[in-house]
Structure formats: structure tokens, C-alpha cells
Length: 210
Image (cartoon, rainbow, N blue to C red; front, top):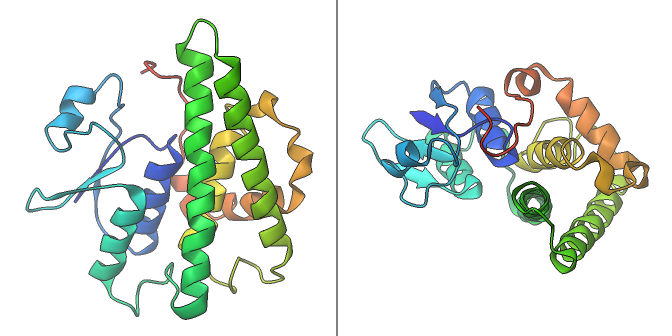
């Protein structure tokens, strides 16, 4: 298997963490959607990351879809990041909100970096969407007394919360008053201290940087 994309992407990173957690061997190609778009296009015409390329050259895109494939590959007994039943539904909901906040973080960052002058209407909208989604996730985390969101084991939702938080609280440090979300900050710090998060990590690079 080959995972395409840089680990400064919260979406690529969540896939890399899942692969490593499950002990699956993979080759990592840290290609950029800007500088390496032509390379990515050979596997994924959308030129987006993450892209997971299987040994038979089948390519999967979208991090949530890729995680479904990975969980299926290892089977229900070994898919420790997945959950079933009510917890499974809650996992999908929480992870989707966290992924949405990360996606809006990408949009806000690109607006700041790629335009000579950011469009105020778009910036305000992204900031509102991110802030209110973090409010929702903060309340969700505060309601859960367990070590991680569901129990004493990591889940895909824990990983997505953490990779999202690491992404937006770094490059977008000046956009928000981060003390507004102490439970999310503590949750992310606890996860980042784990070896797999330390291994699957990369400092943020502005688009076009090598």
C-alpha cells in the first residue's frame, strides 16, 4: 500500500495513524497537492490527499472512506479504532464535525495565504463555522468522563479531533482565543503524547513550500 500526502494535513495524518495503529505496512509518499499535483494525478485525478493506493493499484480517496476500507481489511476484532452500535453512530457524528472544522480551517488558511487580500465575508464565515463547531465539540468532550471519547481506547473520532486541533491551533493560532476550548486542548495534548501521534507528524508548510 502507498499513502500519498503530507502529514501536516489532518486528513492524511488520521489515515497514517490508523495504518500504524493496525500494524499495516505502507509506503508513505509526502507529495504536495501544489508541487506534486502531476504525480498525484497518476493515481487520483482529483489531485487530492489523502490517497491510498493498494497493491493492485486501486486508489481510494476521502479519509473517512479510506478508514472504512482499512477497518474492513483488518476485520472487526482488530479494528480497535472503530465502534459499533450507538457508539459507532456517535463516532461518525463527532468525527464528521471535527473533519468539517478541519476542512474550514484549510479554507481559511488558504484564504489568508493565497490571496493578496483575504475576502472579509469568507473569512468571517469560516471563523464562525470553526468557532461554533469547536463549541459543539467542547461540550461533547466535557460530557464524557472516560479517558478517550468512548472508553479507555482510542477511536477514529479521538484521532480526528486531535489531528484537527493540531492543524488549526498551529497555522491559525492568531485567529481564535484558544482558551475557550480547554477540554479539546487537554484531549489533544493527551493524544499527541502517544508514540503513534509523535511518529505520524509533520510541521505545517505553507502551500508551495518544499
